[in-house]
Image (cartoon, rainbow, N blue to C red; front, side, top):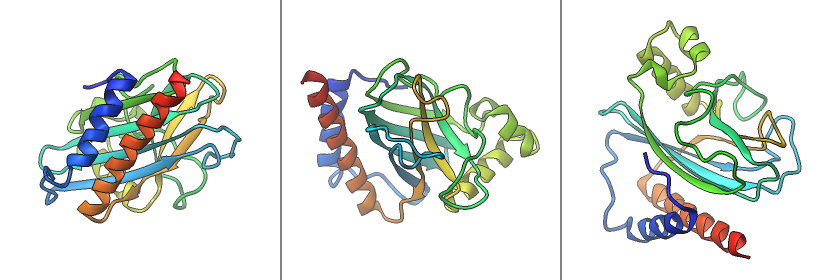
Amino acid sequence: MKIFALARSSVLIAALAVGVSVATPSYAHLQYYAATFSGAAESPANLSPGTGSALVTFDMDLFTMRVEANFTGLLGTTSASHIHCCTVNPGVLNAGVATISPSFTGFPLGVRAGIYDHTFDMALTGSYHPNFLAANGGMASNAFNALLLGLDQGRAYFNIHTSSFGGGEIRGFLQPVPEPETYALLLAGLGLMALTAVRRKRG
């Protein structure tokens, strides 16, 4: 688990974004999903000025899920964050929590801006919400497959809950990232978002 001070993280992520073209990982057994956060994407929508983005990477060999995210400009302070799945239709309405509850392990809470990076062992039943696990036969393998299916269908979203919006202040539906080149651009975007958050905090 890596939770960095905001300023230090922005430098590291920006450097990673610049260097990704010469240090690109193997994509053969990795699946990527990305989201951009906003209050307008919530259901019901709200007027939060908060923004952010996430990149979720599944390693199909190691059976892991890496969650990278950044956020800034929230009206309330963070109280929880997780992935919800699966909505009835893609990109709309709400669904129950699918991942670890009440919040991602080590997610920065009590703040209005932050950066997060943590890798979960998806072979563990504790990596899933109890209700999602029960709905999939109580087996981590079934829950894993159900989550991936929901992500592939655009029926899973990354939600950040705050003290001002208990049901979620900003969220974004995760979408498959089809090509490695797009992945590199997303990393660059994460770095720029982090740098912007630092400037706002200092201002």
